[in-house]
Image (cartoon, rainbow, N blue to C red; front, side, top):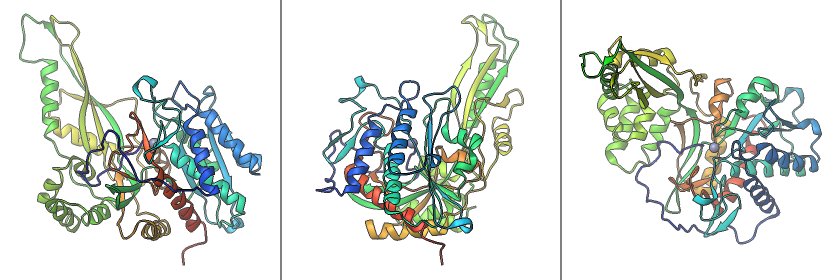
Length: 477
Ligand SMILES: [Zn+2]
């Protein structure tokens, strides 16, 4: 999933029965097709271990075959031993020949987070349109973008659109968890099929205050996820005879010191312009002033302290590490022989695992606390964040102005993680670009009554079509 990170705080709370302005009164043939694909995708259950991503990928594959795509360009790729974790890769050939620029990759995940019928007032796997919203699991995360990409690539084929480069569409499994992440597996086993100059992915979109567009964000970087284990050991003994040394107290004191530790500010090619642009729309004057001060001088400690009062801005400034799980002891009546904590770090992409380890070691200041990498996570550091591809940024900026007026286009760094982590780690720059506008938190992705504005769906459809045509219409002059 993605979160519009670090954008305006303090938006109005979402009401229980929200009403959005209606979508188009009549639909064009292209809009009808996109809606039909969207409905088909939402109504195929793609929850890990319950549903089948392969079924959804097959349904899309048959649409491309029926539209005349050759079988070699419509590849349903199923990892060995994981029959429900199929991925679809479709290639639309450009007319550029051997001299063509590298392809662009359109990426959307087909899997969704579990949704139990009993938790919802309606069937989560039936697409419902009411009060200006589409409702159902996946309406926001991420079947809207999947449907838009499918409809738009089918339209390119129907028109024999003269793209100057190949356009690759990848619809993948297990972004939300599970044991078969499609992007990771495709990179490891079928990389040439998805090799691209860059990818468009979830993780961007527009922010509405009420029904008014305020800003349009491009996801351009992500923090890196690393778990550490803190361990303390002690000979232990009978709890009726406590000693000064104690594994649980020693660990607790180390964690207490960690809670007060602050990693250094690390701005990058994405967060610097993020703060410069966000200062223009940030409603709290002291925050806006601190953003300008920090962009001018990243060593301005007072500005960093002011921004850090907002937890979302704080997390964009620097690496953060926080204790998330705790275990210890082996009996009610024994001194603990062992205590452990999991410490989850979201690492600035310009940092590295060794630097974080050094910071943690300094923070706990106790060589009796062993700090190790938790085995389940492999950090995915890619290249340092780079500015958004200039042609893509031009296209998004220009189209944003035409469609939503004079609002800033803001590159953002997500403090969470998406499939972009795998692609960036493999050297394929990945940008969150959607043209889907919503209020902060409005979609309730992963939760009950997941939703998307009807109007936003059709706007996103047009926007993504126009963006892809702009970046495939020939090199920038
Ligand atoms: Zn998602």
